[in-house]
Image (cartoon, rainbow, N blue to C red; front, side, top):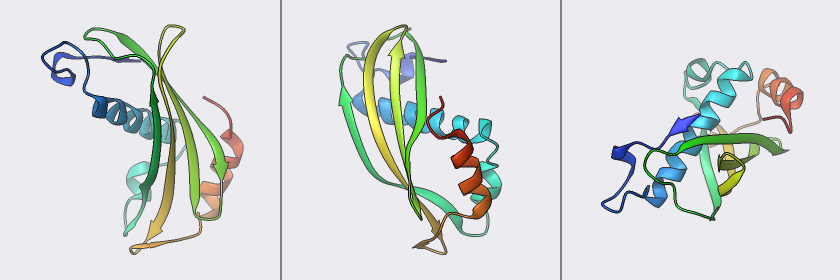
Length: 128
């Protein structure tokens, strides 16, 4: 659960559109930790994920004080990339939804997902 804080909003009391992306990043990182991926270790030794593409649909503004749920699922796994699907909700109300393509990188180049990551993702594909 995330709350929309004053610092996330503009003068109108609505969250700036880029705030959605920040919330998706937080949720995605927490999802990875919960799935058993040591994010800090994965990012060591010049190995990490980058965001390659984001497709986001805004349905309603995020308002100051709202308590949000961000869902994260894996929609697709390829050799060196993941397609993560997100929804930002307030209760049952869909506020935004996004597909985020993540590419695994080693030493500045796309690389095959390590076997342990592939196993983790295969085990949690389609779960929140």
